[in-house]
Amino acid sequence: MNVEYGKPNGKVFNDSIHGHIYMPDYCVRVIDTPHYQRLRDLKQLGVVYWTFPGASHNRFEHGIGTAYLAGSMVTNLLSRSDSIAPQLATRSGPAQPSERAATRAHPLDPVALTSSTATDSGARQGLQSNWRDLERDLRLVRLAGLCHDLGHGPFSHVFDHQLLPRRGIQSDVYGRFHEQRSAMLLAHMCQQFEVALDAMEEALVTDMILGRLSPQSARLTNRFLLAVVNNQRSGVDVDKFDYLTRDARYTLPRSAGFDYERFLRFSRVIGDEICYHIKEANNLYDMFSTRMRMHKMVYNHRAVKACEFMITDAMVLADEFLGLSRSIQDPEAFLQLSDWILKRIEFSTEASLGAAKSLIQQLQRRELYRFVGAALVPVSCASVSAGDLTAWQSDGFVQLRPEDLIVHHQVINYGKEGGADPVEQVRFFVDWSTDETVGVRREQVSSLIPSHFEERMLMVYSRRRDPRYVQAARQAFERMLQRQGGWSPPHRQVGAGEQLPQLFPDRKTIA
Image (cartoon, rainbow, N blue to C red; front, side, top):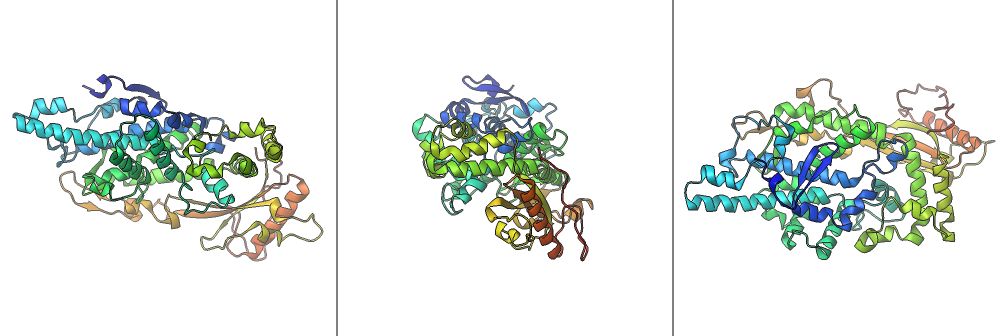
């Protein structure tokens, strides 16, 4: 019997990825607030929608999907724990639900437990007490999954990584990153509405969103809960399971080369850590490879970046009047921000927004910033600025100014800074009947797994569409590449003294 489907006041959502999924009443109360409903107006992939028409999904459904996966993972993990539910432990093998819907049934039904295993009142009381703790853990981790993206701004990561740095907001300022703003909006929501959280539970949900251990969460019996939604150590978490599957479905339907359901079924808690069966190592590499492909082919597509830079410029120009960057520590002001900010600029009669409005109109006409070129660069290469690039321009051409160019340093990796192998941060078990864990190196999994997990690319765009300026920028870029040993356009190696051809010389547009 699926106990949860029979509960009153919850809702069943027909999700495009996970099918029919149940959200209990305490999740519905969060969903039915302005704080969560705002996510309907935030595209999950932000600017990507301007290039990939299928990428119209929003953070609203991603939050629900993450909450569902968080509950499913914890339910599966708890059902396999000897210390938590000995009568349900499956140490002889993984759970075997034959249908996807079976993973949605709560296996720790207190009625079933007390009727089938508790023969005296003391045992029944112990089981009921244990059940209350498990119910709380499930409630908190689901709410963390639901609320983890509340703090995203207009066009999601563009707000954090483009607008705020351009406006001088340093990384040490609280509210600079969306996870911190998610915690801010959660606290504001708890003040404004009847959410099923007391002060201590709110602090625990915040720690689950941030993936951190604090004095409050240090008291948790099940500390592995802090790694379910946001796993700071390895990056293997339900947030990634959902967004990679969802994003690939709507942009590159054949790119999701991993099976997140196997992670739910072939995992268990050993100590305080979520561990996976050794045979899932290749599946984990497939997940991080999918992440890499999505970054290369979708998130950082060169037309996407052109749109991103134009929208960033428009928001920077409008920031003084609209106060976008000032809202990051003001929940009331931040709740007013969404992707609709472009329409607010477009239809405004405010004179100071004229330049921003012009950029948006240019974007709508598909008059994008022109792509100049790109080059793979060594990990150790120094930062190159637009000013550095203009120094390489030739005499006799139009004179490029630094403000005419955008030089973007793009880093793509497997989710770990510095190019570390994230799977090496995961612990695996070989036998369901023991608590022994092992680490895995890529050489033990497959000789086809890459030896490097990070690449850096220098991308150059021209704000001016005049072919003369684009050509001048292209020649300056090519001259710079020729002088830098080891730098090359993608898929090319530059020989000593070789004259490089123009990069993409026949491209009129990048639409």
